Length: 279
Ligand code: 8IG
Image (cartoon, rainbow, N blue to C red; front, side, top):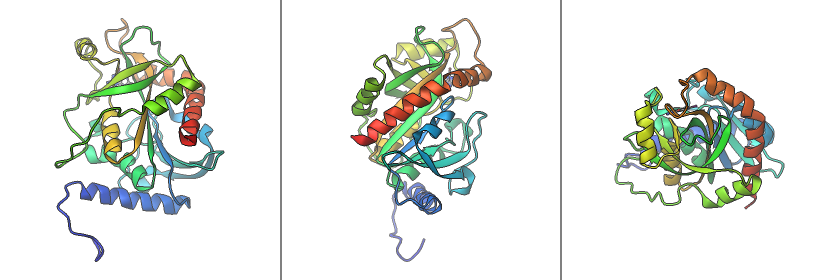
């Protein structure tokens, strides 16, 4: 608090203040005036950052207020600022905080809120997840068309009634299909995790409309919409969801699917992001 701080009863104020601090520190340390677009990298997407542009700064996440080193092997613990060939500034958040880390919903939403506070108007959310459609082999990329938030919580608090219609930008999904017309779409269900689903839970998710099951993205997408950002989500199916294939799930399988898809999906993501910022 300083003499310029307006006293408020807004229950979101502390989280927004922390995001403002993080944004200021991030902009100072990278020497850019603002971020245009931010992208969170999920399982399997780690290589996608390099192709986006020239690296302006790479900052260990733990050095920026409110961020933590990554809890998951295969996730980078860094925030990268890149300059695209058309001189747009992209923030790559390589250190998502998952709900299952039990740091609370504000920690989950902090990357999104920091990006918004730094000026980003577009939030790109990527993840690795399980697929319910048996036609989607591990390594398939799927556009997120909508979500089911099955965590039982919201990243928002107070009387903050935010519309979620067309949450996942139809505009950017169209651009993505211009890059790759074969990209399928699906509804992403966020479970709390960290355990994977039982086969019965996967059948349940399918019956209520899910095509993808994961442990991220929905809460971040809600926070991004509340911050006024355009949201784009894309999943890498790293495994068939429990019970879809006869094989049990393993984190090693997830990492391997990411490694073998890395070059293809980073090219895809780069083209989508570059196009999204031209519009
Ligand atoms: I990678 O099959 C990955 N993340 N909930 N279920 C859930 N999260 C996941 C899965 C999965 N695969």
